[in-house]
Image 1 (spheres, rainbow, N blue to C red):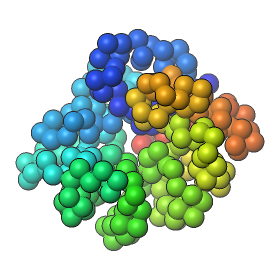
Image 2 (cartoon, rainbow, N blue to C red):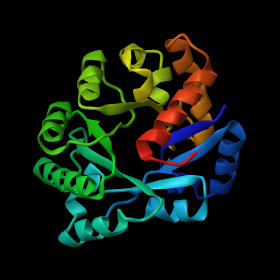
Image 3 (cartoon, rainbow, N blue to C red):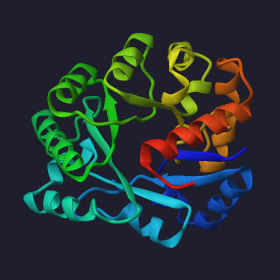
Amino acid sequence: MRLVDSHCHLDDAQFDADREQAIERALAAGVARMLAIGTGSGPPDLEAGIRLAERYDFVFATIGVHPHDAAKSTVETMARLRELAAHAKVLAIGEIGLDYHYDFSPRDVQRSVFEQQLEIAAGAGKPIVIHTREAWPDTMDLLRRHWRGVGIMHCFTGDEAQAREALDLGFHLSFGGVLTFPKAENVRQAARITPPDRLLVETDCPYLAPVPHRGKRNEPAFLVDTVVRLAEVRACAAEEIADLTTQNFERLMAVAR
């Protein structure tokens, strides 16, 4: 199988001791491309993903301010994001959005920073990678009002109705380890109804390791377990899921094969 991990945090400190080995394990498992999410620890450092992408040919990057870090954003932050959006290995703006679970940044600030980044993505002609937690209505409202492009609903954990809502706006749905959790039938139903050309897979590592690795540090090699479970859910071969999701990523991100 040839796979793409469409969302991984390889810059995370949990990989400091064995990052190179984790990447080698991913390649051995068939994960041929990885999208390093560049939100890192937040502003002023905006190049966490780029540093990895410049080191490895098969790693690409995003840039963006996570909603947790929205309060750290300044005028200079947005100016720098506009500059970095032109980097050859930056494929998307993200992960951006709203998180009302932790409220690490005030909600009005989160919304403002989200809107500003939607504007940057539109200006750069880049897809967006959305993080939304306990903020679905506001997230969808802002997207309807301020976004006309394409993007990814990262680590989709919503139900069928929410899936259809996102699909109607033109988004791809990316499924990770949660899909394998015993109680996540709503996520599996969302995966069943997702059109083949809108399907993506991810690890969101080091978080949310799939069964049978649940509770451990997640890593890109574990993407195989999610793909196998997704194939069961959609009653097809794992190779078919691998082919579909790889082609979808390459088309969405305009990456040459």
